[in-house]
Image 1 (cartoon, rainbow, N blue to C red):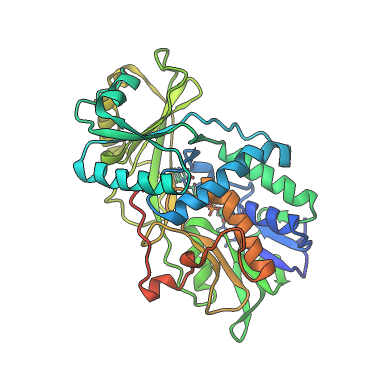
Image 2 (cartoon, rainbow, N blue to C red):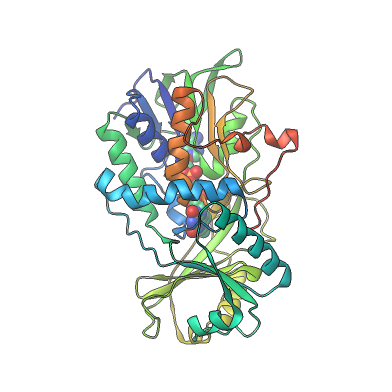
Length: 385
Ligand SMILES: Cc1cc2nc3c(=O)[nH]c(=O)nc-3n(C[C@H](O)[C@H](O)[C@H](O)COP(=O)(O)OP(=O)(O)OC[C@H]3O[C@@H](n4cnc5c(N)ncnc54)[C@H](O)[C@@H]3O)c2cc1C
């Protein structure tokens, strides 16, 4: 399909953020929304590489509030959009083997309780009896929330794209935004290889590539791409059906059930920023050693698939959400630092409110403004995996 020549809003990027923003803008009556994705399919960037986890368990009020807003939107998703998203409230268990983590997670638990989130504290013995097939001698305790879980990333994107289209939005693939036209310090539209689109509002939803969109209009977006990789095992007969999303926080190692096997990931904290999405075999060995040390039966299980993707990381592991102060008409929904899928319903809604009403009214997102970095008002998140 040829792109239109004029739009009210152009969204750059068709991952979870762009798709949710397009849907929520169209739902609120903004008819002339155009979403441009350079790949031949939507949702093949960070979103398509994601582990699918959804959780309330964060250490800052704004991240917890984004989850409180987002997770019920996932509950309603199929009814609202007619798309099943394989939502599984299997629970999330963060186990802790260092005193400092136990202290920090207890503090986060108090904050979650104050905000109405019923995360529980488990003792080391309770964790060991819940996960008898794991080696957990050093575990001091854990936080557990039965309302956390999993969702299918691709279904979420497809649901939002189909919903946006039904409401009149034009969501187009194989169109790369190559530049942004400005009039003074106000956006006028985007350049693509198949022509220009005039628009007063442009949304940067380019995920790990967000900083490159910022460079097109000389706005610094402090988002760096960082490789993260995942492996999925062959079927495991002894895996209990109620195996939750389990995180070994000290090791940045996680496991969850994926079909008849286990999906596991482990973040390499020394990974330098880059756009490299090749699986690192050396890191995979370190990852598997750590995984087998926790789940000994993995020694006898093969790998059925593996991949690497990119986190879009900000200096404080919080997103950048809302209008950019330097350029009128330029909006950001970037930098979700490894937990964006779960916040995409809420953030698409909040950005649509900000664009159409001048201010997000469902939740105060002032703390997520781009200018916080130069103001020195960072809001560090402890609970990053
Ligand atoms: C291994 C891994 C595990 C993860 N696990 C989880 C998890 O368990 N839970 C969770 O909530 N989050 C998780 N995340 C994070 C989550 O995937 C991201 O935060 C989220 O998907 C970001 O969505 P996005 O739409 O911003 O980015 P993307 O999905 O990357 O979408 C951006 C899109 O913009 C397009 N684009 C870029 N530049 C241009 C251009 N110039 N013109 C047109 N299109 C352009 C790209 O092609 C891409 O499709 C994980 C990420 C990874 C890599």
